[in-house]
Amino acid sequence: MQALLAMWSEKFVGYPDGSDLPAHHDHCLGCGPENPHGHRLRAVRHGDGVQAWHTFDNRHVGAPGIAHGGAVATVVDDLYGFLLFLEGGPAVTRQLAVDYLAPVLIGTTYRLDAQVARREGRKLFVTAGATAPDGRPVITSTAVFVKVSVEHFAQGISPDVPGD
Ligand SMILES: CCCCCCCCCCCC(=O)SCCNC(=O)CCNC(=O)[C@H](O)C(C)(C)COP(=O)(O)OP(=O)(O)OC[C@H]1O[C@@H](n2cnc3c(N)ncnc32)[C@H](O)[C@@H]1OP(=O)(O)O
Image (cartoon, rainbow, N blue to C red; front, side):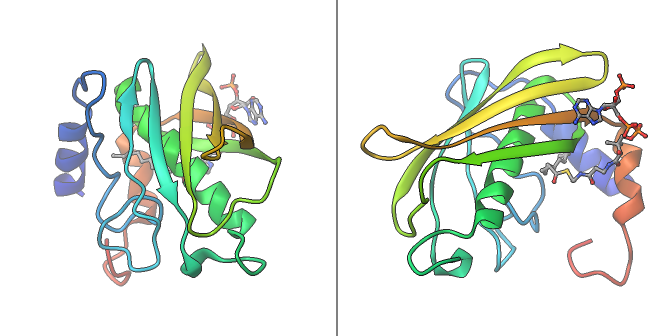
């Protein structure tokens, strides 16, 4: 637990505009480089928000040729998680909504953007979207994140689960 806390506190530092943001951790489904099932999402700071380019592959297919809606939601949720590095501390998803405006195609690279729309007490109201190469919006999203202490994550740490 102490090693995890130390590793995370090192990640909540200032990030200049345009800089790469770190993975949440190596096995994160959204961005972890060591998760064989994961999306390996990479994001950069873009002004006061975050931006990513992402291509879904056949591990995340729903209908043939189309990304599974749950996989899309995973990536959006994780993209919001990168905003936390700009906020300076952890938070967790309390509510997530995704509007699927058009199919997200396997093998097509989409631009994703997320930002904090509003802060209210411990809540962050966030918004995101994904844009196709021709400029069409394919999804929009809103979510509510709630700030937590790093001790919140101790609930999930088990010596029997790989990756902990
Ligand atoms: C290094 C990386 C580290 C960070 C690592 C981050 C990794 C990012 C990965 C992507 C993100 C994830 O997958 S996160 C994992 C998925 N999410 C989770 O596991 C969270 C599970 N839920 C919880 O643990 C809990 O519900 C909490 C901690 C979120 C909150 O519990 P609580 O303290 O009891 O509070 P609760 O009653 O639930 O409500 C909290 C506040 O939200 C408000 N609220 C609730 N629903 C809504 C709603 N739909 N719209 C508006 N507001 C709402 C309530 O009114 C309240 O406001 P007020 O009374 O305060 O005004």
